[in-house]
Picture 1 (tube, rainbow, N blue to C red):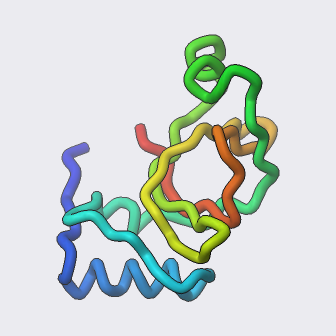
Picture 2: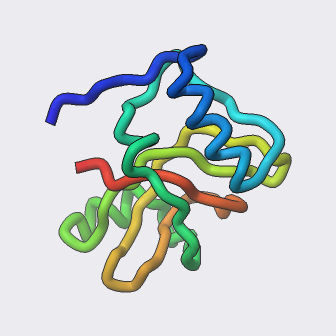
Picture 3: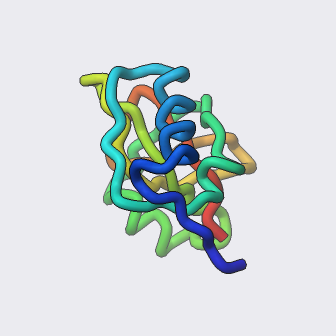
Length: 110
């Protein structure tokens, strides 16, 4: 599937920013463009977070068939949303990341 992008300053990007701020936080660090799929299909992941020994890269390489890559935004402890990607194990409803954030919003990148 070919990606369509939202550009910074457009109405759709402003709606996306509002969507994140309605969840929490006080600011969103937006890049110049992001895939529209994030606005259309992204959702809040409310599940436990684990920091794997050796980091997520090592975990992914050793268990590639068990995990999905999620692309989106995370809310840090300062209340700022920033772009980020993390691993998700659907079977256990578990996020794997190198750091634990307040909230995770994204979609599975196929």
